[in-house]
Image (cartoon, rainbow, N blue to C red; front, top):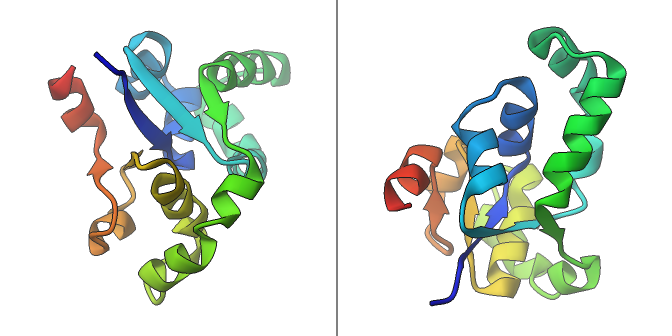
Length: 138
C-alpha cells in the first residue's frame, strides 16, 4: 500500500519545534510521506526567537531539532510548485496569499495539506488534514 503524502504547512513545523507534541511525533514516527515547500524556511526563521523562548531551547538545540525535522520532509523543487502557482493564487485569492505555495504544492503532487490554519478550510480544491485527523487516521 502506498504511503499517504501530505504537504506540511509551516505551522506544523513550528509546533513541532516548540513542544514534543503530536506534530513532532507524527513527523518522527508516522508512516507518512511529508512534502515541504522552501517558503517554510524563511517563515520558521522569522519566528525563531519566539520558538527559542517558548520551547526554552538554545540556538544549538533549535538548529539540531530543525535539522532532524527537516530530514523527515521531502522539499519539493520550486519548479514543480510553480506549475500550479497561478491556479493556487486563484483558489486562495482573498483568503491568505501566504498559503498559496502550499496549495500549489498539493495540486502539483495530487496530495493534501497538513495544517491547523483555518484559512485552508475556506477552500475546497485540496484536502486538508488537521493533526487530530491524521492521528485518528493512523
